[in-house]
Length: 136
Image 1 (cartoon, rainbow, N blue to C red):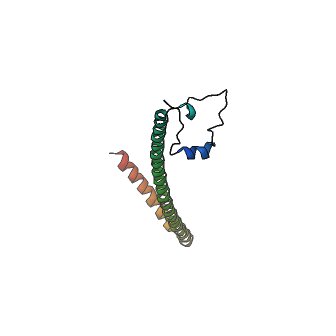
Image 2: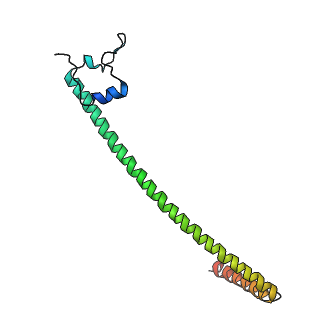
Image 3: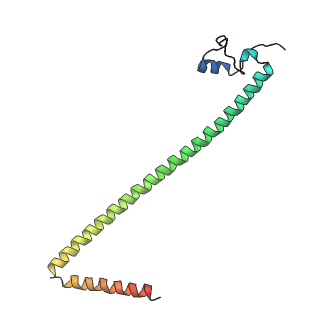
């Protein structure tokens, strides 16, 4: 068997990433994956394992991208919902403020007569609800 170093299709990418290490190996350090000591079959086996790992990473990245897009859609939907909820609370606050102002004006102009009727009605409704709920 001849020990030849054949350049694999993705070798130039590794050279760009890690630098060309074909002649820069240290004499005292040897790696089990040293290309100068591997056969073409071993190199092909390692390349196929790397390609399998890369395809697995591609599928994981695609899954993460889908999850990220779903999260973005959920955030946009929640933001619009919270905006609508804020508007509703604003309108309700305005309505309560107007009602409170009218109630103050009514109480001030009628010498409290209508206020007494309203308080009596509220107490009556409270007792009615109390007996209706707890008498069942």
